Image 1: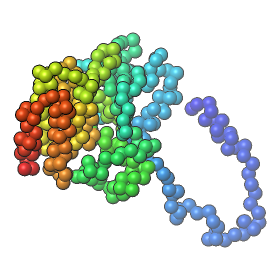
Image 2 (image 1 turned 90 degrees about the vertical axis):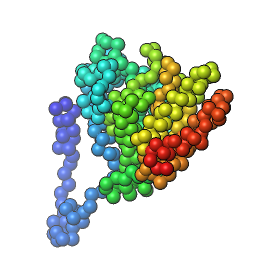
Image 3 (image 1 turned 30 degrees about the horizontal axis):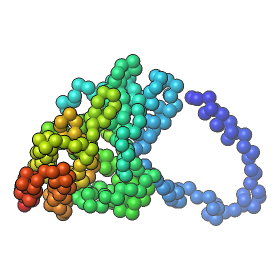
Length: 328
């Protein structure tokens, strides 16, 4: 036991006791105001989901042992406490429990989550770069898009559904974790199918660790919106994008928020990111509209870069996606 634990008990021992007066002793037990078993527990605001509670407890444990961490490390690897990505696992994934994580800074900030650059490895080794996506929860109220995307997703417990609907602090934590769970599940499913998505390494509460797409020096791959491709490359990227849409549709899915800002171009390869709002187009009443919006957003960017409608043929593409998804 830590030294200050015993000191804490001494503080209680030294408090002066208060004698009860005769009038207090004579008060009938039924009339006394102190009640225990029949009183409800005080209401608490901002209750955490179980996954988030475990994650925060782990961070507190690491804080107590901070002096034992190797120089420069921010925490021990959270691999042991996390949900893991699909098999076969890439050989670059670090699974040793003696590994440490070093936070190298923010790669991207967003309304619902921030993405940090993380290096995980055994002390004294180069380690592996990862993208750590951390969903904000109780302290933020910016899950502005969730009403439509969460159609078709239902929690089993009515208390949890009420918390989400009323956007209580507990409900916002549930939404944050629901986004993380949904994105991790979608990435795992799509990566297994061979879709162009980053490998999902692990999920721990509201934090996802994902394959880092970029260079060894930590420079992230650019988003599609940042590149200025030549005509031949532009056309190739369009066909890569439509192939990704068709693969999602074959699984009855739509990205739900597709644009040039959530597609990366990594060494000539288009990679789909930001999938927390992935939509089941069969279960969601607005499934066709989500497909149509993905096509419109994507085609709009390519048209703006000079790719003609005779190449994109968006009307035909949408019809094919609807048919492939089995909702046409």
